[in-house]
Amino acid sequence: MTAAAGNFVEVRDLHFAYGDNRVLRGLSLDVPRGKVVGILGTSGCGKSTLLKLIGGQLRPARGTIHVDGKTGLSGAGRTASDAALYAVAQESVRPYRVPGHQHTPEMERGIELASGFTPAVVFVPHLVPAVRGVVTTAYGSLAPGATTESLTSCLLETYAGRAFVRVLPPGEMADSKRTRGSNVVELQAVADARTGTAVVIGALDNLVKGAAGQAIQNFNLVHELNETAGLTSLAVYP
Image 1: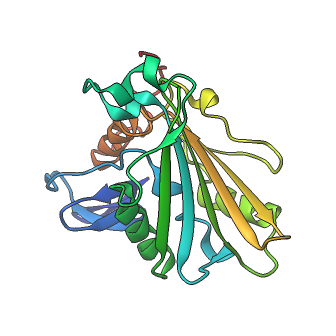
Image 2 (image 1 turned 30 degrees about the horizontal axis):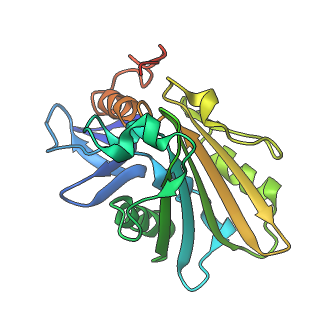
């Protein structure tokens, strides 16, 4: 995922570098070889990856994309609170931080840099009675002629050769349980011709791909190590 260019390394597969607001995942950044490049921030739940690489198959409807997220209790961290107690959360599904969740501007900036249009993202996350796992469903306006097959082909082409991205074939549904303990993200795309809607669904383990495993993956890329180093074992606690 890196290519040497004189005294620089072109990094193509990172996510976000906060501070200078440069999006690195799917784009390019010349990093001086052997130099420390400030602080590399890694997206907490990887939600923007569900939207960024649909390419020409999505067209903005008044610039708005709707995103619905479901996340397990571990996403709230270890801080003691009633909302994070499993006894309270059991048999409960509830939204939180609506509007103004911290991931919303991250999504908008990522889509803008990757696609060239400036979207407005409506993001509604929900807390569900599970320990870990994130499933995010994104809805956008479908480009004329786009199909489930063409959306899936776009994802397959974009993520070809990526060690930790699993693009599902048409008809197969994403499931956070299949990603548990791993650095893998599952992606699924559906075209709803009746309503003219493109639906992109992603599932990952919030304690690995979002974001400790992703941080290790980014470290490997920056230091020209094997991208999968330290990420082939399952991490299943809690």
